[in-house]
Length: 69
Image 1 (tube, rainbow, N blue to C red):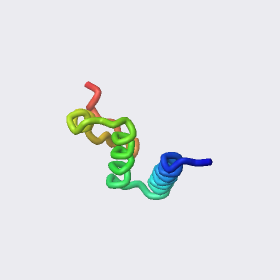
Image 2 (cartoon, rainbow, N blue to C red):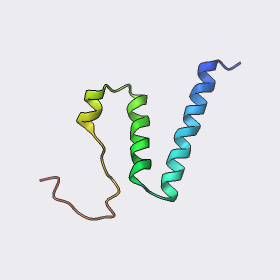
Image 3 (cartoon, rainbow, N blue to C red):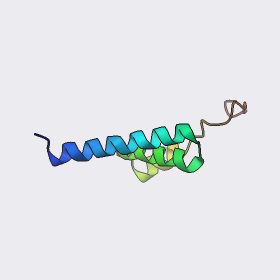
Image 4 (tube, rainbow, N blue to C red):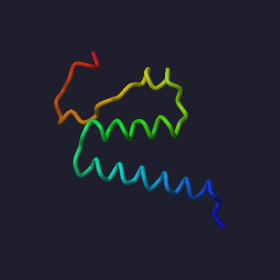
């Protein structure tokens, strides 16, 4: 027997899976930010923590940047 929470969790998993599959087909910053938002929600981050982390663009098309210096 599945509880309402179990069903909600499965629905959330399906939504996350859909987001990941969709971004693999066609990347966009909006899709990446939606995935970030899901991760932030999953970990229950505060607004301050979300702002400290920010959005990280891992899709820089292989171009090197000087961000690590």
